[in-house]
Amino acid sequence: MRVAAVLLVVLLFGADGGRADARTAGGNNTQDGATVWVELDESPGGSGAAGSTIQCTSTVVTKPGLANLVTPSDVIGHWILRRCSDVSADPPRQVSLAYVWVTEGDPAELARRAADTLVLPLPEVQTSPRRGAPAVVGLPTWFWTEPAGWQPQQASATLSGVTVTAVATPVETTVDAGGDERVVCPGPGRPYDVDRSPSANGRSDCALTFPSGGERQVTVATRWSLSWSATNGGGGELDDVVRTTSFTVPVRELQAVLEG
Image (cartoon, rainbow, N blue to C red; front, side, top):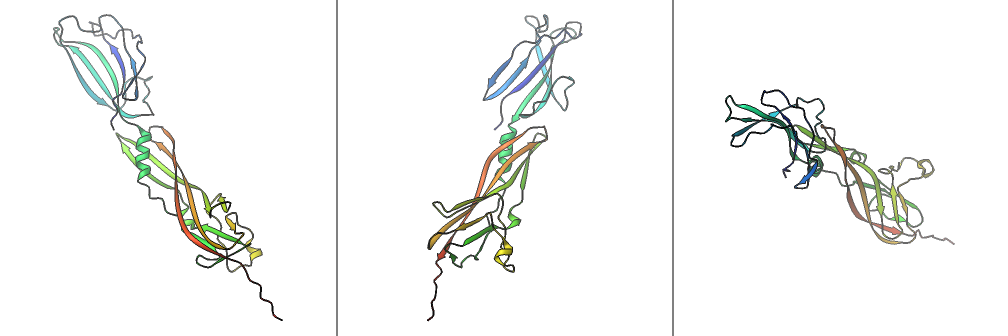
């Protein structure tokens, strides 16, 4: 959506073509949900006389010719140099010179559009005991996601020479089997090495211990934190994104066999 907003700075010229002393008037107004900053010169004689014909031309400029004029970083747009002249005068007399900031879009919205193009992977979950095999009551079941899916992703979009880059970073994994059987892991989890003993593998910060047998519907979720930055200096945060994978884990009790 193009936002109708301008930042207008006017420098008025007197009848002799010299620059009049600038004085600031006006303030902040709102238009179509955007802020319009206006600074107007109130010098006398700056406008055309009664019955005069004023004509204006506008030219897109890359960099305004005023050292103290700052390009907004919270909106995307471009500068226009607007000249107005009294063409009924002989010779024609320039009456105003204005730098106008024309807003074309919101960089945060452009960042959201870039983020929408990201293809964040679903968690590829591995377990120990392996998926499909029963977990054992009272013993920890390890969960982890493939490291290849635990990498930052980014996408960019450009408008009017401003490039906005959205970055999604995985921040945590949640394993949820319902009720109290839930754990939040600070990373993707650690793979269990079947070639090492249980004591050598140590403990996992991404494991569940089931207190009873039965079928568990387990959901593993990866939460992605999204941020954005723009080449005009803007930046911020976007809403988190969660990707999930669900599957069934059978849980069995070990049965002791007595021989006599």
